[in-house]
Amino acid sequence: MNGRTAYLDTSAFLKLIVAEPESQALGRFLRRWPLRATATLLRTETVRALRRTGHDAELSVAHRLFRALRFIRIDEPLLDQAGGLDPREMRTLDAIHLSAALALGSDLGVFVTYDGRLAEAA
Image 1 (spheres, helix red, strand yellow):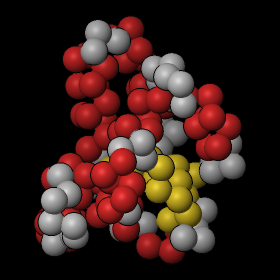
Image 2 (cartoon, rainbow, N blue to C red):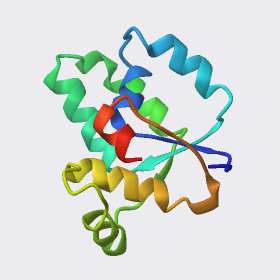
Image 3 (cartoon, one colour):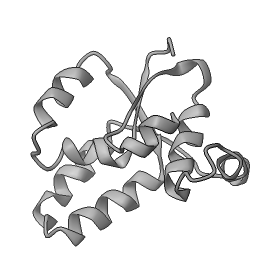
Image 4 (cartoon, one colour):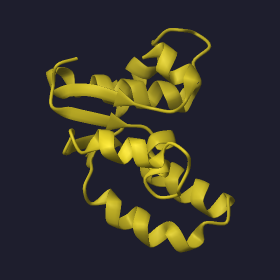
């Protein structure tokens, strides 16, 4: 990967909102990647995760951070590609994130995730 855009999945994005052990290191790392992208799916996943874990107060932070992202639309070709990705054991939403990252083509510089299975697939 030699592009200029960092793709963030939801596991990474949430660390920018809710303080976790990796949050500061991730923030420092992302300073080198001012161009950031993700699938539109991240919006729903983020809101659901914050509500599910009782972090409703952080929803306004999430909405502010959404504005700094380039959202990749989930369309039929992207979903078809996601369905055909290996490994076969990859979960559906992970495959959608990976397919969205691949849609960046040569713009993709780094794929940021804290999901071990997704990192292995990427």
